[in-house]
Amino acid sequence: MSEYQYYEFHALDRPLTSEAQAEMHRLSSRVNLTATSASFAYNYGDFRGDPYLVLAEHFDAMLYITNWGMRQLMFRFPLHIIPDDVMKAYQVADSLEWSAEGEYVILNIELREEEPDYEWIEGEGLLAGLVQVRDDVLRGDYRALYLAWLMIASYELDFLEEEDEAEAALTEPEVPPNLQALSPALRNFINFFGIDADLVTAAAQTSPKAEKNSAKLSAYLDQLAAAEQRSFLERLLKSEPHLDVVLANRLRELSDAETGTLPAGERRTIRQLVTASQSVRQQRLDAERQEAEIIHMKKLGKIAQQQDRLWGQIPALINQKRANTYEEAVSILKDLRDLAAHQQRLAEFQEKLAAIRSQYPTLQGLHRRLKEARLT
Image 1 (cartoon, helix red, strand yellow):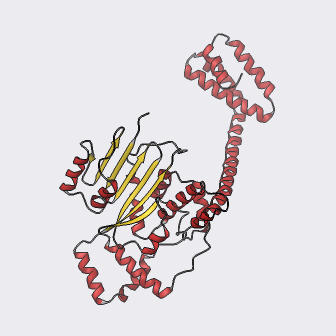
Image 2 (tube, rainbow, N blue to C red):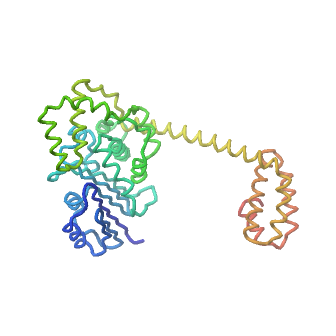
C-alpha cells in the first residue's frame, strides 16, 4: 500500500493575499487552492514547505493526517489573546505545545501512533468541521484543550509502570464547564484524534454546568477608564480582528477582581480517570444490552402474532426462484427460529424447516443460504 499524507490550511480572519496564493503554487503545482484555503495530498513525496511557518505566515488553522498514525492540528492566535495561565495549564511536551511566532501564538496538537488501533481515513473536508474549535478557544471555551490533554495523557499512561513517579505530572488541569454537552466541532475533534468516548464521559463527571455570561460582563463596561474606552473604539474603527474577545477578557479581569475566583476542585490523575472510564464503559455496555433485549423481545412479540402468516409466505417466496426472494425467505426463517428458541419449540421449528428443504431438494441457491444462515 502506498503512503498517504494530507495537509490542509484555512485562513479564517482574512483571505489570502495574491502573494500568499502565489507561494502556495510554488510549494506545489497540484495544490487545491481557494481564497481562504490550501490543501496538499501526497501518495509519494513530501510537502516542500515547513507547515509550521506556512501556518504562522498565512493561515489560522492546519490539519495533517497520514495513513501511518500521525494526526495533527495547529491553530494560530493573535499574541496576548490567550491567557498565560491557560497556555501553562494545557501544555504537554511534544504533543500539546504553545509557541510564539512574531505577532502570533501557535498551538500544536499532535498524536503519533506507530500502530494505530483505528481505521485510517482520508483528510479531505475534515478541517472545515474543526475550525470552530479555534473560535471557541479564543472566546474562553477550553474544552478542546482539556480533551487534547486527556488524549495525550491517556496515551502516555500506556508507557508508565504502576505508581511511576512520572504519573504525578499527569494530573488533570482544571476541568472546563459543560464538558458533558459537546458541540459538533468537539465531537469532530474527538473523532479525529480517536479519543475514548467513555474516558470523556468519566472526565465530564466533575465538569460544572455554566451559562455564557456576556450579559453579566457588560455590567463592567462603566469600570473602564475613559481613555481605555476610547482606545477600544479606535481599534474597532480599524477593524481589529477579535476585538470583542479582547474586550471580554478585559471585562472578565474586572469581574474576577470583584467577585474573586472559585477554588479549583480536586484534580484527578489520568490513571484515576482511566479507571473511572472502565466503570463508565461497563455501565454503557450493560445499558446497551438491556436496550437490545427490550427491542428483541418486542420484535419476537410481533413475530408471534403473525407466525402462521409468515410460514405461509415462505413457499411463495421460494417458488419465485430468485436470489432476493431466497434471501427474504431465509430472513423470515431466522426470525421464526429465534421465536421458536424463545418459546422452547425448536424441535417443531426443525420439523417444519425439514419439510421445506425436502420440498425443494434441487434449489442449490436456497440450500446454500440456509447453510450460511446456520439454519441447517
